[in-house]
Length: 317
Image (cartoon, rainbow, N blue to C red; front, top):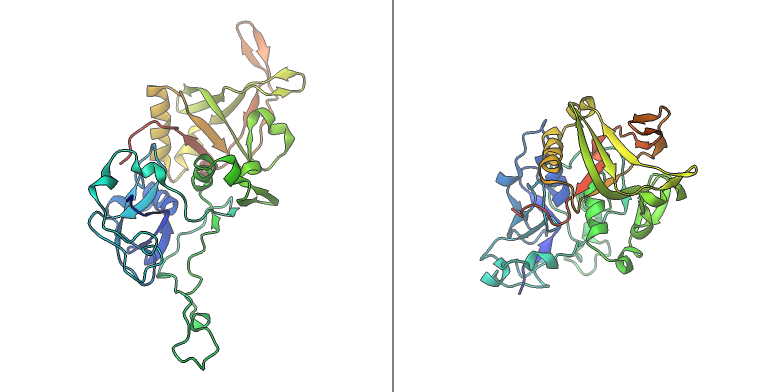
């Protein structure tokens, strides 16, 4: 039987439950000292301390969705809610190539926050709702525990998390998963818009296939394959990323690793997602050897609002 796969775990270093995407966010933060490869994780269930390990929690590129799994030769406790589903020792079968592809998220974020949220710290594990020890007591014991709501999985500021939910589920599932972005209340299926149809609605998550990336000194331009019809022409869309924006970004090493990979290995199969901005027509025409044209530009103010999905490239670590 395959290992239980979780998208959140209790982290000893923070004394809190973190999602796998919070762990990735902290690991790649150049201004933080957290190293996810050396962190200690365990089952988030209050009644279980089974050790967990991260899969792709410290990988810049990955083929399989990041998650936590049970450490080999360990098992969940009898009282564990997660262990009740599959409380077996990890076997050699779980090590075989491809088993991680069966991963399904145990929850999904319902709100995407455009401002980064600080990670929880010192909140411990969520307390279960338990029946009172005295049958005569009518008050649920959990109601008096201020720690009962110390893990709120429904909100996230990690665009990568939301993108992975969209990528790893089919349309039938996505239409039943709600997602709020600012004042937009959608489901996952409708919250993502291919840039060919970006004029349909503002304020969504837009995505397209990367056609090329060009290096302009320390500045870069990511150009999409899609050329939407806008004001009488099929327009090129590019994201121009200045060095100043990269240098002010707390995950600048990871971002430059993305860029270096694109420049070295090409952009085949790469998708680009962005949020919090909208393509606009460039005011000054771009001159070429054959004339000039006015492309559409995406102006990012925060690189947290950009995700490159490498779609099967890279190694799982």
